[in-house]
Image (cartoon, rainbow, N blue to C red):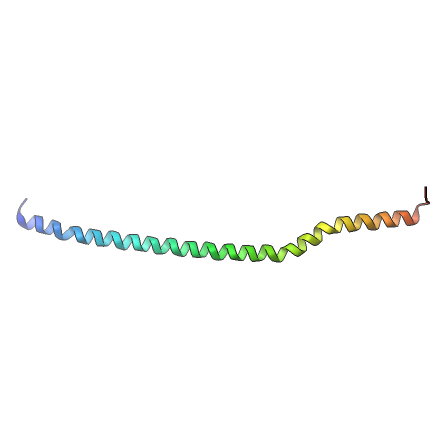
Length: 81
């Protein structure tokens, strides 16, 4: 290998390193943005779930109330046994 080729090769190495570092930085930034988006989505889902909790609790209580009301109605219309 002649001297000119060796010098050119040595000059290309730092450029390749810089290019690799730049790609790694871009990848890191993209991962960071994706993590932030996932965090935002998780927060939104958590808030939505919390807003549905009272309705869910109400739906769980309704069958018990309905049972009690039907039982009271039946006791009022049926003769005591």
